[in-house]
Image 1 (tube, rainbow over the protein chains, first blue to last red):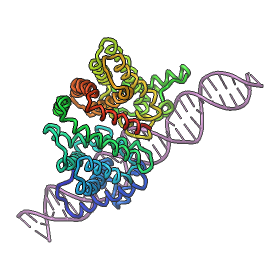
Image 2: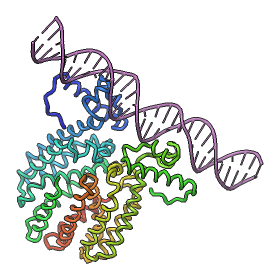
Image 3: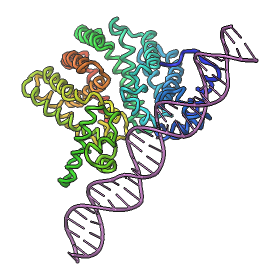
Image 4: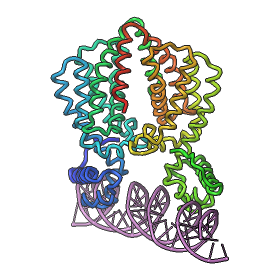
Length: 224
Length: 224
DNA sequence: AGTCATAGTTGAACACGTTCAAAGATGGAG
DNA sequence: CTCCATCTTTGAACGTGTTCAACTATGACT
């Protein structure tokens, strides 16, 4: 469950100070090297108190996710405002993510290691991440909606989630990307966006339509 | 790296008894609930001795991973021998994996965790996993080579690796699949194989060819 | 003001994965 | 046989995430 319930100002303040402390320490020392004791001390609370607000160390990291997510949403506004064609909008949003995430790349590996486990609340597929995931999917919905892209209705409904999946793939590549400034990931985005654009326009071709319908059907069957 | 170096019989025996003990306990009590102390006791060795052979609890799990790989290769022989069309061969090999991996599903997340950590030698993308990865890709090369599939040369060369990537995607789905007997994963395979078959045959269509060439170009650019 | 349920806070204690210095076996060289 | 280097084995000790019973603060209601 993510936090939407009202909270007393004092409690909210304590909660925030724990997040801030964790942020500082994660950033300077990495995830694994940062202990809950250190976080508690940095925040000026007891260990048990930190656990009162965050039921595990991983839940604490969720704040990181949210921060990147928020920064990405903000950084996406510019390309979404200026770009009108689908290709430019998608490119802008994906590159905005690479920009925003760059400072975290160093310890992102440690980070995503824990996120890859299905039982982990950090998993992008988990219930705990639902809010952030929906926000990210909505971003891609905006990429499509105000663009010039024409699609069959069945595909149009699924495309935001598919683009989010694409983004997860790019993230996976990014995590393994050791090139300076993650240049290879940027190249990947630059090169793959036009291809995706062309592929999507191909979906209206007579011979291709049937396959697209099947794919949409598959998605419906497979969704939980 | 998997173990090909010669080892003394006594040491090998101890090593194997630790694996066996871990197998039993993981299977009966799950990964998290099984302690290294319990494994050591079950194997009749000290805790430190278990660490002499396996440098971490996760490395112990990798013994599982290797076992799945071997079993999959063996289980794939039957469909590869009996099926002649591409679709049937691919389906057979993918379902063979789901069959073979089923007993390990419960704690499969634990070694999938390693897959996401870029620096880990256990990552399927790592140099250390190259041999196992190549073996898996070769399996898919055999799926294609003796089948009825006709492809443009550029694509044919890349397809085994792409199918391996597809398999990684299915593994990702499987890891998150909590349905009984991983039925949903089986459904995914059943449904997606015909679609992939149709998509691949579409690649020879005039309007589609250009995109396929671009994709092949992208793969070449992105490969390390 | 007094009462009481609820929210917030504490740090010692627990269980676990992992490490390490020390000890024991092994086997080849002289 | 003796020596010595290397492989193997040990279990106590360490650091970690997490739990918990006990304690304190808050604020609403009489």
